[in-house]
Length: 389
Image (cartoon, rainbow, N blue to C red; front, side):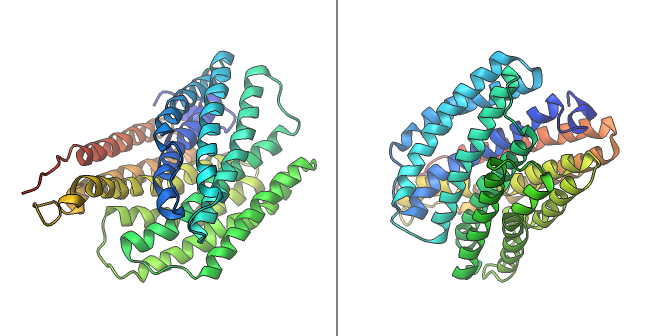
C-alpha cells in the first residue's frame, strides 16, 4: 500500500526485503513456531519442556520481527542490531526446547524425522540470516554474499517451510480428511532427498562455490521432493479420501499443493533467466502462495479443533455441545480464501506489468486477508463454554 510498484520491482529494494521477512518470519514463522509447540507432543509422544515459556519466546520474536522489518526498510543500524539480538534470543530458546523434545521422541515415524529436519534447517537459515542482517547494519558482509543469500533461501523455503509442511501433511491429512497415508518408503525417500538437497548447497558455498546455477542444481533433490513429488502424491491422497465433504480448509490445501510445482518452475526461471521479475514472482508465489495458503487454511481447521477439544470434549454426553464445524462458518473461510487468492493473482500481475495501482491493490487485498483471518479466529475464540446439564 505504501510503496506501490517500489515493493515489487527488485529483490534488492529495502521495501521488498522488508516485505519478504514480514511474510517469512512474521506470518509463516510465527504460526510454524506456535504449531510445533502444539504438534510435537502429539506426534513425537514427548512433552516440550517448559512449554509455557512459549510466551517468553513469542515476545522477543515479535519484537525482533518488527525491528528487522523496520531496519530493513529504513536502513537504521540500531533497529537491525536490536533485531539480531531479539531474534537470536527467541530462536535459540525455541530450538533448545524443541530439540530436547525431538531428541528422544516416544514415536519414531517419518513426521518426527521431518520435524527434526525442519528444526535443523531453521538453525541454518537463522544463523545465515542473522549474519546477513548484521552485515546490513555494519556494511561487513560475508564473502560470496549472493551465494550465501541463495543458500539462506534454500534452507528456509525447502528445509524449514518445506520440511515442516510435508511432515505435518502426513499427519493432518489422514486425521482431518481421512486421506490414505502415503507409503512408508515414499515418505522416507522424500526426507532423504530433501536432506540431500539442503546439505549440497550448504557444502558447496562452504567450499567456495558461487555459481547460482550450480547451487541450484545441488538443491534439485529437495525441490523435486518438496515441490513436485510430495504435492502430487498428497493431491492424489486427498482425491482418494474417505470423507468426501469439501470445506474451505480443504480448498486451501488443494490450492497450496497445486501451486507447489509452479513454485518449482519459477525457482528455475529465477536462476536461469536474466529478467529480474522472475525472482520476484518466485518469492511471491512461494511465500504468499504455496506456503501461506496452507498456513492460512490450517489455522481455520486446527484452531476450531483445539477450542472444541478444550472447551467441549469434557461435557460430551452431559450437555449439548456444538459440532466443530459450527464454531467457524464455512462462509468465513471461503471469504478468506477468495481474498488470499485475489491478493496472489493481483501480486503476480503487478510484478509482471509494473502497474502501481495493481501493486497497491495487492497490498489492500493482503490487508483484507489478514483482517478476514483475524475475524475468523475471533469468532472461534469467543465461543462460550457450556456447563454440565
